[in-house]
Amino acid sequence: MSTKGCILTLWKKLFPATVEEMLKESKAVPVCSREFRILDIVHGIYGLIDEVQLTPESFIVIDDKPGTRTYVSNIRQVYGYCLAFRAAVCLQDRRQLIGALRERGTDNIYWRRNSINWLNKK
Image (cartoon, rainbow, N blue to C red; front, side):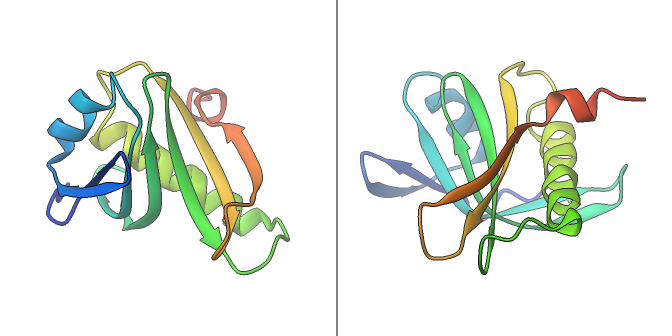
């Protein structure tokens, strides 16, 4: 997984940060990363996650979409990002992993699910 370009948003200020720094800091205060580059060779998943929010309780993987219609393909993309994020970043960290779809350019989360149940299915 590439960690270049990760941005840590803390108190509405931007700081360059590694994934390890973000994970450590997020145990105390919420942090956020935009355009989070993910690469999971095992599952063959790569891409840019629009936003990842790391809070003391959970990780939220957010994909921005134009509009608020929930397509199965969008849900599968978010679950794929969750699978890759879990494998590459939070395998040892047991915080809740949540996938979400957000209307582009807004704070409107129109679909949100705990992805752990889906990821644990065999």
